[in-house]
Length: 392
Length: 125
Image (cartoon, one colour):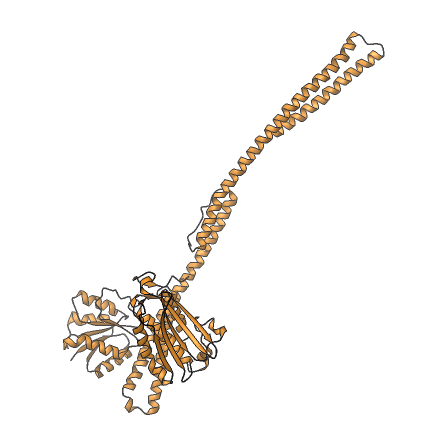
């Protein structure tokens, strides 16, 4: 409309200029005739009429200009309004797909592998949506491949553990059979059979640990927690460990706070953790070292600590102490018979109980490993079976 | 004398278990899979039926778990111990409702096994 207005304005202005020019021309011709003495009354009238005509034309053009200006203004307003409407329509038609895209991206990031957007609307947002869906498809494919690999790994560990156990049962069983008749063996033979048995036990421990870790990774390491007394568990583990610590003249002591609350835990698993911690303290400490087990209440949790005055763990190793197959220097160079998995499993187990595990050490002074477990009254997910969170 | 029927697909393990149990004074019979165990009841056994079963959880043809399920359906109430190469019943895929007297892991802790057998058969001698 503005364009039409402007066009019309230019045309009118042109017509006006032409008309004025013609009027002057007519008047000038009339004046020339009058100057030459040829003019009549009519010629004078022509001069007066042309002056009047120009005056009228000027009035007319100014009113026309006003109209045209109004027209132009109206056109401009209408045009702007239209553009605004068009633009806001464009914005709103883009907004919905974009919001949907943001929402889907959020869900995808949160682990919803099925998050997709509806492809539609403007071609730009449709392209964006299609690209997003393509990316999500690719991620889903990769994730399902990863899941499949994880399943294969778990199956492999389970099968390997099963297949290795049968021959191991035979080796250990027959070696034990020989030891039942120990008196008929020479000391050298008896020692040989002891070595076979030691190595069998080590292999069994390794297999059990690997299986526990595979279960933990697969989210299938399950515990059945119930209100459990701490003191008898510690007494039991200390009794089990005593033969080993006494063999190296190590002092194994315990200090259990009276009236400890019950913990929400599976006794066998807590025993497994404590055996792991005590075995480490025993194996990494020299002859004559002291090892102390303490249990106390800290912030409504029960803390069980194992402290030794062994060589300690350097800071750079302490950081990685709960990772798999990470072992202290002694584990690599000395008689230590661990699998390098004990602390990793202990950590998984403690966390499965809703607790925490920590290690402190000062090289040359000793190390302390502590676990904290929720008291039975305020445990998360009371009395229901718990399983490791789905490994991500 | 208490009769023990052991089922395992490994001859070596059968030999090992037979030796240990015979040393402990039991009469031992062996089967190579679960099918042979079920057949003892289907066809009868001239030597007499066992007082206790030691079944490997995983065997070809018929697993110890499946054999025990069939026996229970047939009304056989003989106590049974499942020997599993896995660490627990969940891994052995044993249904909870199956009447099992206990689970034992491989490698076998023979002291524990002999204790369990003694407990389960004292009233049968």
